[in-house]
Image (cartoon, rainbow over all chains, first blue to last red; front, side, top):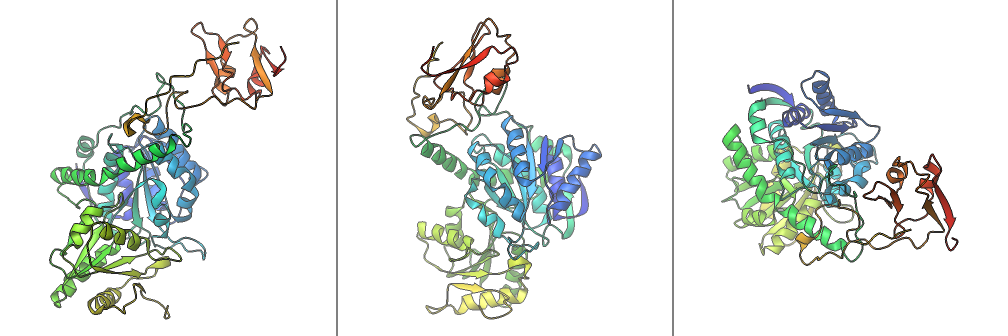
Length: 392
Length: 101
């Protein structure tokens, strides 16, 4: 029986994980992810989820255990955030290089120092090159649905890559909303039991783990990993369509264009702030502004072609993001500009950095953004800082 | 003493010919690597009780089981660390200086 419940983002993730029936979970608690792994632990304790739950001593061990579990074909899940994600860092390319479809929830949080437990997206941007598929949820319902879809995506034999599902810390992980919980039978039909793929360990065919590949061979391993990850973009769209048929909800593929088709001004972002942007697009449209939203749901692989298509008719683009690559610009901005350049889309783009360390991004901030974009000329600086306490 | 045959050099003409992931049976795209060995382990088959300890504990997977169930050291890969000799309960493995008999 499917049901509805009043859940926060962490609890929605826990439900998505429970419905996906992972066989091994190894996790270390960290704010603001703690409630997710606590809730999953409760499911296991109460006998509602049959799985091996490992209480590890660190995030490095959590990922190492997940790699071990996945390398014998077990469905493995873990969750972390911020400093914990960075501590896992060494293990992340082991998982992706070994083509192990581990799924991880990352509660996006600021990086030290100064120390801060609140939400921004500096942590995930740090790990974009780790070989993990990167998905972003806007709300708790999308987070639940993405957990189930992430296992399908990563475990597909043409993809075989680990998947990170990002939820903005506190704004999404700790905010409650009405969430539909699909029935176990429906999820079982949608997400079959995991397969032991031929590159995974089994007793009949012993193999060496993490073989060496020197300068004569290493590059081809990496290129193969890269090219096969690209297939995840189209697959996410197909999975979403199939999910919609079964569960009645579609979130789109790698990106969603909201009232963007005829918009002069496009706002682009990833994660929970897209909820505010969606609201403001509606409000500003009523006031006569020609504005639309591009919501990035997938940042690796990057939807180059789809982004170019979504931006083709616009005059100006504002990229809003909660991260900053010191000494350059926001990382989404870099990625977006390269995609537009590759596809020969000529429009001016501007970068809006905000929300660092949990700073609010308000409706007024979005109005300011749109105002800057409307008036933008050759003198307008490329990078803007939102909601500052003092001029930058 | 016997040196094990290296597997044939694989044909790697297309990306699909490369192993998926980084798990693969031993000897694939590897080269001999034992040049720095100073002492070599020598197994006395008469003392060996075939307990598998050396086989399981060799950090380089350089001890092989023959079809008859005996154990032999692969000197193309053995680095001479001596773990097998240290762990062998019936002391069937002795470390001999390279160049000596």
